[in-house]
Image (cartoon, rainbow, N blue to C red; front, top):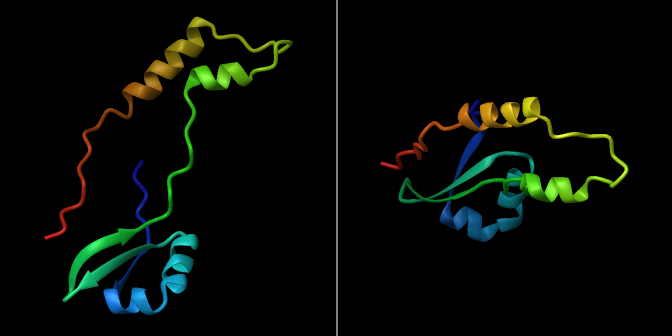
Length: 94
């Protein structure tokens, strides 16, 4: 599921004059498109949350945990991965 992010447009001069304001918009979850002569030159967007590999998660599992990685779990993980194999289509900036 792709979620549309609120986008605001600012000129290079506006961003240079008040970079803190542009970053505040990003902190609020907005995407700031920086423009020069009404052409997009950069995009400031919120950072992606850090991701962990399954092996890292398993390494953090306490030794006395009763969690098990059975075949149903492995099947669920495979299904989740397969359901997100769509090709990346970056936005056109023209």
